Amino acid sequence: MQKDTENWYTSWFDTPYYHILYKNRDYKEAGLFMKNLTSFLNLHKNDEVLDLACGKGRHAKYLNELGFNVTGVDLSPKSIAFAKQYENSSLHFEEHDMCLPYPKKFDAVFNLFTSFGYFENEEDNLRTIKAIKAELKPNGFAVIDFLNAEYVKRNLVPSETKTIDNITFHINRSIVDGYIIKNIRFQYEHEDFSFQERVKAITLLDFQNCFKEAELNLLHCFGDYQLNNFDEETSQRLILIFN
Image (cartoon, rainbow, N blue to C red):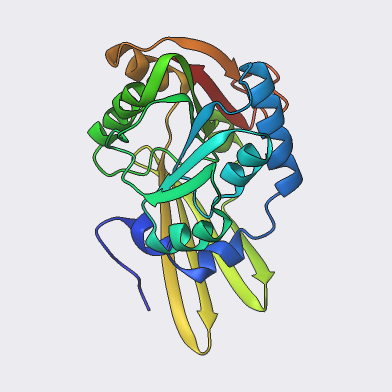
């Protein structure tokens, strides 16, 4: 069964299988990253933070536990419906397209875990950057946590198989026309499923050019969740802080 809609992420992210495949993400590491990041930015208790493309809300929950007023937004109705169970007076979730400015300003806007570069129209990447700019209070900070495209190109694993919750996922990776593509096939209850992830292989230089066009300043560039300096050859992440 091929799940095919206008945008791959609107179908794939809204399935339970996406969350099964990625259920073993390092939650401890995610929490440590939020502590490192908010400490580095010198954010204060009750500061307002936007978690842009928040998924089911794991980063938003950590940020709220650290004492921040957090709004999590995502395009996936099912992810937001799930995240809403965690809402409280200082944690809220809402469906929202990150290409468009959210109608509120924040002390910090976070776009985490490679939640960028999905769009077929590259202009939407710039629209998103401009939307982030519009969402920042004066002297606010924005963060994009992206993959290091150069590292991925050098270390691409063409194929692998993972069995999680009795589902065997067959994963094939390639780089085509500047996109990092992951094809995912599996069978569940005697039905065949096929999904694809497509992420633009955006480099540091690409981001710098985009920031320049949006009249934003790149302040810091880190290569991992411990906030070590970025190295194009060895860093697995590309973490950008700008305003």
